[in-house]
Image (cartoon, rainbow, N blue to C red; front, side):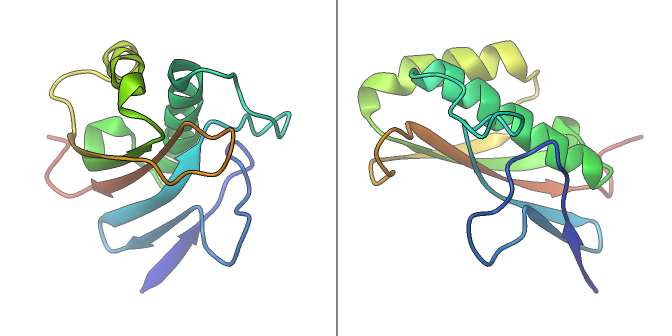
Length: 129
């Protein structure tokens, strides 16, 4: 059975999709950008600031689903430009802990002003002993 996950602690979807969906022990979090859910505005003008906020949004959604970053297997990142890769890595190092999730990073294609978008795949079974 597919379960819709939603929290007010992350930005509301801007289209016909869920913040996350859970089937069994698998949780797929939709792409999150650096929008602060309290203000509805971007958390900053740098890739670092937007990455930190996107990770906060993902964490809020994961927690609503009964998970956290310890349950995340994979993060898929869309980064506006390769020059921002260092800021992305710094945000990950400061906000996640080892062992880090697997990650794929693609460049370009984001709307004006958005520097990063991140989605997450988490699995609850077998990750907490």
